[in-house]
Image 1 (tube, rainbow, N blue to C red):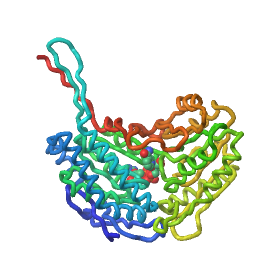
Image 2: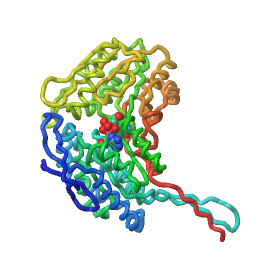
Image 3: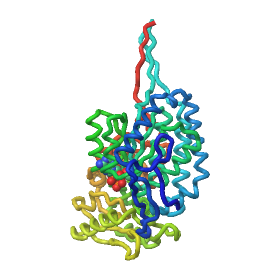
Image 4: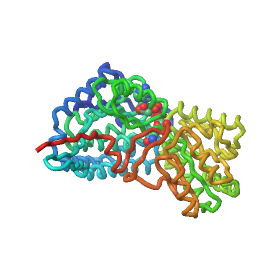
Length: 476
Ligand code: NAD
């Protein structure tokens, strides 16, 4: 593990302008493992200026779209050489298990190759206006894209936005998350080796209220991509409104799976457990609520309890199934919300409080007997906590599933295809999974409805969030 990491600005690796640093903790031990340069507003100014210069030099736009695509393929190739180090830092600064650390690399490479392949396929339209006129549309980049990513999956979440921005000719200033910034620095090294033009990608690490706020309110950015919580998202939108710039907002979730009485309960229990316990529940689209037909409620809860009991919890370096949550602050929040659930009368089936050992470990936790008004039925834990709510009719199930402020993902478990369609049609969510959690991937558009945000990442549709349409009309 390197002891110190610098920010990447204008193609140079630089200390913070005022020399400050941020300590990076291993969430499995609570100990400091490294330091990063703490970017402040002077560093944000410098990064935005570098991105602006590179954008205005038109170096990306003078490349053919196919050449910009090739650049993405080359970054993906270069990442092969960083895979071991990335997996290591994902275990150490993020609390991922080692297999998941490696998966972050292959997922990032998938994004780069997918969007690299799209670079020369974003076509405009020709609009018929009659004799003597030629009219066509082109997709223009916005300019400098400011991007803010959260700590749970910085590498693939960051890389997919960077790839979309670069292949469409934008330049990027990304603020990496203060808790787990390291993998994105290795990504920047891969970009450097791949020959990404200096200043096209700039990465500044820093705290949200200081560095993040300085970036999103900067007078010289043209576009914002924000992934994080609803509360922070609102302040980002206020800053964007001041300058009337477009945003892609990927916010939180409280995603519900509806389990009908005819569902395969063994498979459903396995799927739902994976959907909530993977990466200790720190996934925005985690299966955090299960809405279960009353006739199979108790049987499914027993199966879920068994799933929770077979999972080992501990440091990723020890090969456990579930690692720590990111920080003491996050662990205390999760525990506090669990206490609220107990006080409000929910039944604790498993887990519920931290493991008494160094680091920030929360065991797989399940609440049953949850009612829709309880805080635990509405607030996002962003941890390994599942709430189970019974229902009697399909109409009630849909009403419960749609009954929170969020609308990111949703699921349906049934053998009845007609009922699956009926339900998917009525769920207000950006993605609906039937008979498995996370059906989809790099190719499928992903994003929120309601307070979960707007705009789409992933899939072909994401690219449209990085370009604006220009219409050219020519009288011959
Ligand atoms: P957060 O909102 O606290 O922080 C997200 C990022 O915003 C961090 O980099 C942080 O430094 C920065 N930030 C904080 N205050 C800021 C400010 N005033 N101005 C600008 N930037 C600021 O969220 P978090 O706790 O790091 O992440 C968890 C949240 O992210 C959850 O709600 C989760 O659901 C959501 N999330 C959503 C997706 C998605 O794609 N929909 C993916 C991952 C996480």
